[in-house]
Image (cartoon, rainbow, N blue to C red; front, side, top):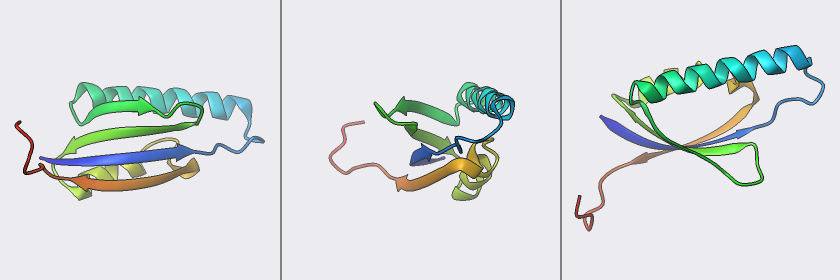
Length: 93
């Protein structure tokens, strides 16, 4: 398994049809919750005051993470920053 720190900043156009927006946000929520239940999206934190989050993914590979991110319904409206993680030599875990 590989761990990744992912920051997602969302910028939905203000003129997007409200029904399309609501449907996209609902679909995004269902997709993300399914990935959480699968153990792939292990942490999800909102950044206070922003339409942004910091997430930790535990996936088989960078390719799997790429597919997950590209399939996010809000992906077209996101700026995403990915950082691969590895164990720290001073960690006791």
